Length: 310
Image (cartoon, rainbow, N blue to C red; front, top):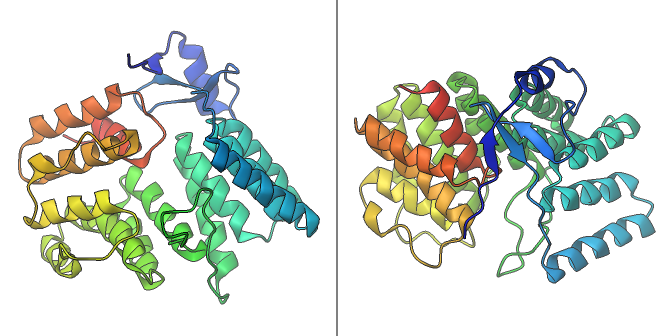
């Protein structure tokens, strides 16, 4: 039985408090993480981490502590809280870390991500823009995964993650011009197929939103069915749908997890939208929203479309 974790807000005062409070974590009931763009309460979804993931993160925390690398220690502590669905606590940990290490771009990158999850887009943008200034003139570094992929090869970097998430924050606010700039910067530091596919996915949709259809089509020229990927297969399949090289009806399989379903949902809704099937697009985005899996980016984007798109 599927349990939905979104319910209508019962008290307007809660929404007002969320919007007017200037602290890092608006005053909400303890088991509430945020208020959706549609005014629904987003509850904590208690998550028991797989033993392998929890053990790995704990070992990374211990390793950072052993090297007196307190900023990294706090990052992994915050990431662990995020994995557990405690996004507000994760954000609080990162805010405390920034007070002690205000020049560490990694902290702003991770806190910006948490602000995105909590629907605080302006604060997310401020953090990512701050991170951009801090990485200027520096060498890029690999960002380690919480749980390694099948090849134990991290696919993302600090700079790519900063630009990628900044682009998403602008995209969710319908500021597509700044989103385009962020994704173009992201492509400049995307040095593997997985990074390129993820970036091109949002970049293509941004260009279509801007009416730059010819440039968007050119962007898809690099997307071929035989691209070798470690992850990001869902974005790859959706790009092939946009390009007309893949049957949209064959996307979802029984093996797809909750994240894939939300990702495919937003992408397929977008595909219908740009092809003039607005009603069908909204039906799919509504299905994504009704799923209650409110943290992934596909859900965030579907939520924003239900609020802003016609």
